[in-house]
Image (cartoon, rainbow, N blue to C red; front, side, top):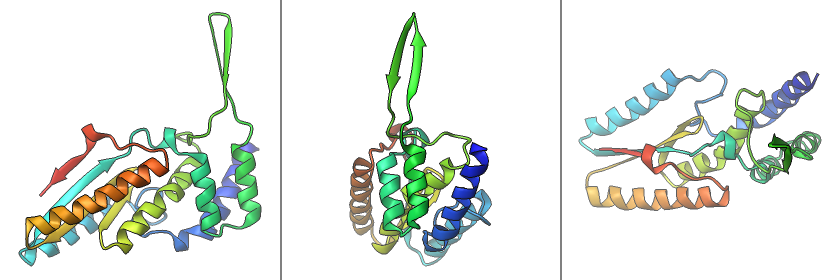
Length: 196
């Protein structure tokens, strides 16, 4: 029964929010796939290269993204995106009162989590996309090409000189870093790649 209720709620949230979310998220989005993500970014890069521009791409990986999806940030985004109040209240109840119990060596440890979307759950992908959406929207509004496939984010910068590209990349990466701090998320430096 719980899974059925979760599916109904998530379908209603998606119906309400998807039309207003960034089109640059390719993971867990209807009608989008890895092939679409790859095709779009290669098409964009090729058009810049054809114009004799330098292209710099930065691939970012969010450390333990689903495990660290912070519930207060998800609830905030639901409110900010004008998700219907009754759905927001159900989501608040969904997160409320959860606890993790570990029994080891005849002792019991209880912790009340404030983060995490269970991988393989019905709600996890949608909650993750809601959390990541403002990053994609803000970057796009600032003129940075950004796209994501679930928790993997690619930024693309182009231009005629490396100095201006580097400056724009540094500004965007600083914004990404601050967004991560605000949402209690870290980027995995060992998985961050740069191509030019």
